[in-house]
Amino acid sequence: MKIINLTSNSNIYTSNVYFLLGDWKAIDDVNTLIDVGRDSSIIEKIRQLDTGIGKKRVEKVVLTHGHYDHASLLPVIKDEFNPDAYSFHPFNGVSYALRNGQVLKLADRWFEVIHTPGHTSDSICLYCAEEGSLFSGDAGLIVTAMDGSYQEAFVNALESIARRNIKVIYPGHGKPITRQPKQLLYNSLDNIRKSKIF
Image (cartoon, rainbow, N blue to C red; front, side, top):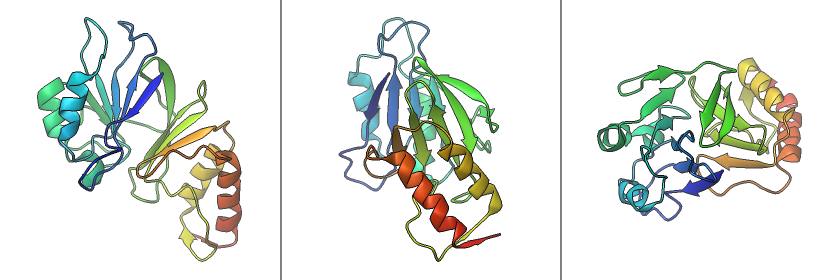
């Protein structure tokens, strides 16, 4: 699987927009955007990429949540590429509602949807067991302080995530977390347990 961050050099405030392509760009691979952000320069970047012959350039969009910096460009993406759009809580432009534990094909891999309410009620993470990769959106998985308060549903989701074999975390903002991501998740759980859980 190829992962391209289309907004890594963006000049405006936007989320990371990850474009997932199969290694061989086979006809049954599903060219997917994880989040769409708000920087329209990604349209031309997508047009210039080799996305495979006889396929839609963008077949699927998965939104990690509905905040403007992650979802604003959805109408433009839909007009340009006509993909199916998925999110946990459907809103205008979203074709399909996701559910916790659902499995989706993105690029040439299978991903599990993990509902992680906290940042928003519709926040999700996407986990690929084969790659050990987690796309986390804005879910606050890395907790370094012990003075917060956390909903039980978020803590349960974080415990579930920490049990998985995660080798890299692709966040909604910033660079991928490749150095001991699993240990960081365990540290986060320790800090949360020393805080308040409601």
